Image 1 (cartoon, rainbow, N blue to C red):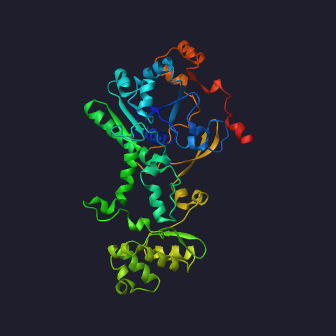
Image 2 (cartoon, one colour):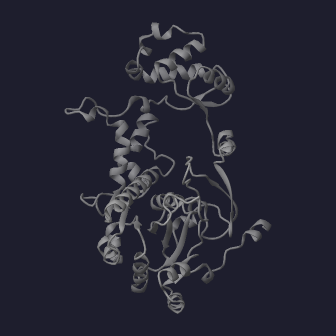
Image 3 (tube, helix red, strand yellow):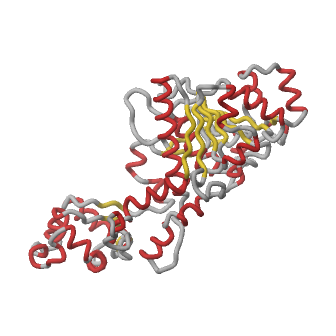
Length: 414
């Protein structure tokens, strides 16, 4: 099945998580993604347990559906080679500070000289129109400046913490995907490319404040912000007699069904705290505390059966081991086996969603560093003798120039 982005070539100068996650999504949609790496590779190659150097799971899980070229962009020859490759690209995407791109000679103005119709997308910490324009940014920093740790502190023990996943990187990465797709759609209609800046801070600030701006949305403010239900310290998985369960009793119908199921059908009429959504939000801490006490009286299986019968939203609470055996994920084929040529048998996650015509799916294994350097330069018009000179001058590298990875068969024998 042909992907939606079949025929689109993306020159990918991103690293770590934000950009690689976004370009992996585009690669899964069928784009030819050329991952441009420094000679020492994307830093995420070194994170986590691995069978071969440079092939850690964080890298593998964000870089499938791509080809890799390892090139020294700090050299004039490397910059020249990249500009040659850029001539045949539809999209140029990076997640470096614009000042760093200027030092490399790879700004929008530089790229548009060789490819006037390019879509040039940059994702970095802050808008270039403000005083933070040149500040470095990582997920932790953006979580902090966009208020997430203070919200966690308000909802918990008063100590600020980061969300234990790269939330800012992933959210901004998805917005980067949306922006690139919209720019490609516009280019298809007008024939014109454009430059796009996607700042992490502003993206995450909007993402968080959509829920929590609250009374600050008004002038003068009606409160100090924050969505009480989400900030309730009792908003968490409920403990049962033998484990935990996740349920959200939310609408009037849910509450009536819940109390009827436990033999207290008249609560909504007798207790004004439950009379409406507004009243429940006002008393959310005590309501959640009471529900917590009730759910301690039965086992997880008993509550699952009762709440499903009452048509109340409920799920089990997974950990990292149990989710691998979730019956729904198994039935939908979410976890897929992959036979990687150097890393052996892997488990990967299927692209979410079902399409009737252009189903996104992994198109390539996560590449070894510089695995496609020669192939990509040949496509750009380089002769073999010129490629060999670039190798000899250490402008590009290939896996053969370092210790070769163990093949899959050898891994299986270890």
